[in-house]
Length: 326
Ligand code: NAP
Image: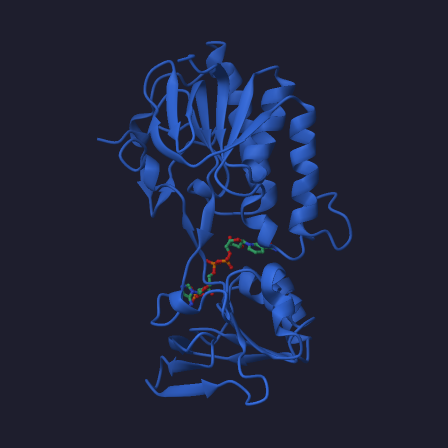
């Protein structure tokens, strides 16, 4: 059996953080391997429009931005493999990651595993995924051409994607558990100025119904406790429910080795975790602003710190006691 190559840096995840790390690692002449479980891009591949990343094109979509990031990382020599990591051995000078397809060795590791959409968690939801229930407007919006659409959630994602979904649906209703949106004002304004958008305040979805396809949903008013059943229009036979109620960080694999807070990996501002040579970047990190721009910045810093660590120049080579799992 041949011994796997030892890379300078193993990067887990090919979203904006991982790809920026790959770019900066390549520019620092580090050998870098990006390990992606499924599809390049992370959450932004399911984002319809990116208009707050500096230099993004007019009507830039998540997939188009990510395509350019992937090409750029490749240009600087980063290698990529598609594999799901199932074991991470992070201590020691040589880190070892075990995937379903192989084993990977590296002098340092950058964790950029991001987060996945949080489900509502109500009865019927799981059974009706892809049959009316979706977590991706760009992927599934066109299935609801001229139909009714409900968007669950009141944050930036929900409101932005609701605006996008008005391209397809005849009416888009935002169902939010409070009577004011969490989304920032500029995004709220887009929704408020769109005549196709309606609001169902103080409401949560308590059940989704349908035999093979979504046909009805029960919505509960959290203030009065009253439950209302909303049926699909008879002619349509169905409607769309798009769920955007936040994200769950992909950190379970590291829970016994790295310090997590609310599921997010705790790092210092230079992306160091509690284990020397192990860094975290992007949405997986505990931080206040989760955006493409902050993910990319994290990735760049993590790669530069990995380079310093390998050269023995890292200012922080001792584990920070506040980040060590005890
Ligand atoms: P978020 O900010 O966490 O918002 C989640 C929304 O879902 C909130 O309105 C929350 O209600 C609601 N919610 C949570 N759990 C729920 C449940 N079980 N049932 C019903 N509703 C529930 O998530 P996000 O909107 O996906 O945004 C994530 C991050 O990405 C944020 O930092 C955001 O700023 C950023 N983002 C930025 C942009 C942009 O700048 N263009 C676009 C998208 C996302 P409450 O409000 O009552 O808590």
